[in-house]
Length: 60
Image (cartoon, rainbow, N blue to C red; front, side, top):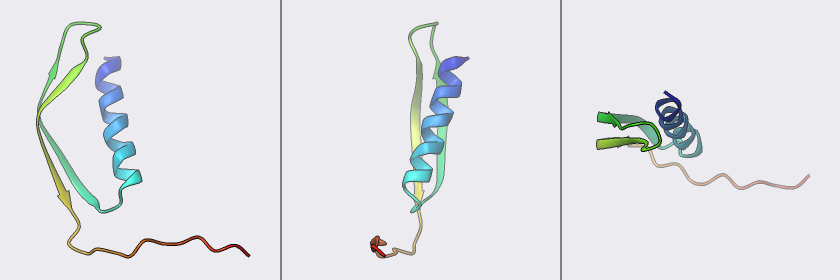
């Protein structure tokens, strides 16, 4: 169960770090024996059609 929670957290974190990702489809996630992890067999990532310029931080 920990491995399933971990993969969901990692996917969520990736989406937070990359706002251009609008959808992730993990099709067929295989949960192996304890200690052997979780494996996504097929992954589909949809990116936004809008490409925004990077935001630069400014010191005040």
